[in-house]
Length: 77
Image (cartoon, rainbow, N blue to C red; front, side, top):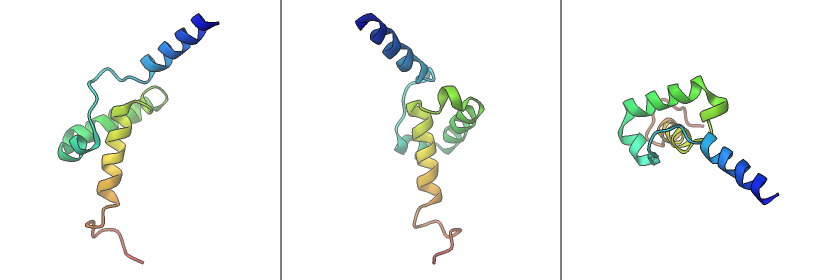
């Protein structure tokens, strides 16, 4: 039983990794070209990569940019 849990945990950890070193949200906010490339890669295979730290951080950086108070394209209610 313990061996099964170890194998399952290892599969989940390996499956959530996209093979590149992890970057945080400020990194993706500062490197927009890499952010867009990572989002495109994640969107091509969301079932496999969507939960990886890089995909989540790239999407979060994009969300923070879009919903920033400085973004004048968003109408204020």
